[in-house]
Length: 78
Image 1 (cartoon, rainbow, N blue to C red):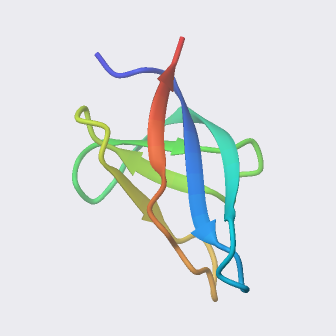
Image 2 (tube, one colour):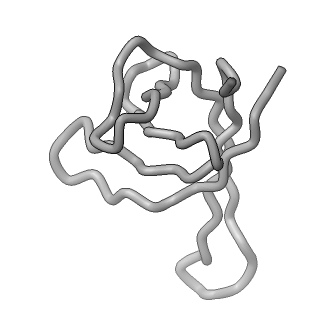
């Protein structure tokens, strides 16, 4: 059984190429299923949505125009 909540961690190089900028977002399971048939998780604003497989693979889902989607890592939360 999959977790009801995940911590998504986004890592990217800064514009100068030095250091790593990391953002973390907590997402909770919704009633929706993604294109791969896995549960969709959302942040409280509903802007960030991700389909997460039982193996922890993350597929970001666009919720608006001009989004630049990058694949985060997912950590199940209790």
